[in-house]
Amino acid sequence: MTAPSPVFVAGTGRSGTSQLADIIGEHPRIHRIPIETRFLVDPGGLRDLADALTSRYDPFVGDDALRRLSELLTVRLAGRRDVDRGHTVPTAIGERHYWEAVGRLWSELVACTFDESVPAAGAGHGDWPAGPFEPQSHRRAIPRYFGDRRELIGILRRAVTTMFGGAAADAGKPTWCEKTPFNLLYMDFLWEIFPEATIVHIKRHPVAVVASHVDQPWAPPTVDGALAWLRPVYDRWLAWSATADLTSRRYVEVKAEDLAADWPGQRRALFERLGVDDFATRSTFQSHRLEHRHGQFDRRTREFVERTLDGVIPAMGYA
Image (cartoon, rainbow, N blue to C red; front, side, top):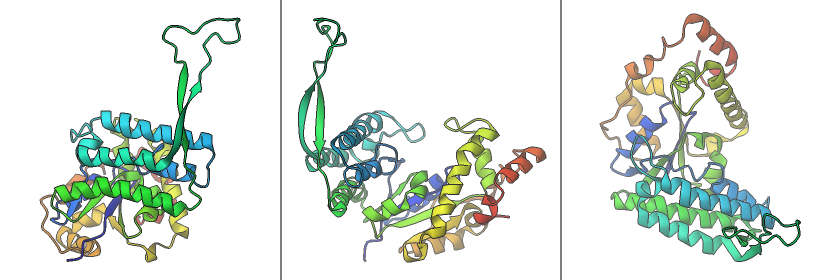
């Protein structure tokens, strides 16, 4: 059988992305990367790097982008364990695949390195010597400039394929699924790297999304704060999607509420659009797990949220 295409799951956050990614990963032909990897679209990740070494290139911009990518890949993602799933990104992917890809990146992206002298803290005040522990130099990288962006995209694709494809092969599956909610806002970049990928956008009623954000430790704890966080996300998505030709891409849009209302039928349709046979997964979407947010706000608060999201709610397909 032809291998199904890679899958990216996207949403606003708190819209069902984790549940959907789990379900897709329970299919015998698709491996779910167990946690959000984040390095494709987060600040300092591959998306920023692609611009810094092409359209925004100068040696300082490129050095900064490489430095931020190195810190992201070798410090933040390698040292931060996911609270819910117990993995770091390297362990979620597989240490061998992860570090092989990271190590190869530097030789492909860096033209050369050199040590730049660092003046002592007292420079300009006579002959003040450097302190015993002050750095005497600063390591700098001269990044490659990619006049042909496609060459750089090919390098990034190989790195991601080494990681995600290696993880899928270890699981005995031909392809993979990666979920980071804000894949929603960077579909162009994801399709630039993987034109054959399917992006699944899962939606949930925006009022319920606001209610769920208020309860998260990583999100603003007030309704005003949650709205300030979410309204620009909706506005960006709606503005971009209004001009994007999503019909020519492998794009799937689903509502969490529809999945719960007719799970077997919706699951069958989803897997068909992913290019795989239907499969009865252990995980499902269930109405009662979505409806508990309906009574979270009192009438006045709900009306305030609806007024603030006036235009967004119908544009997302909700009444």
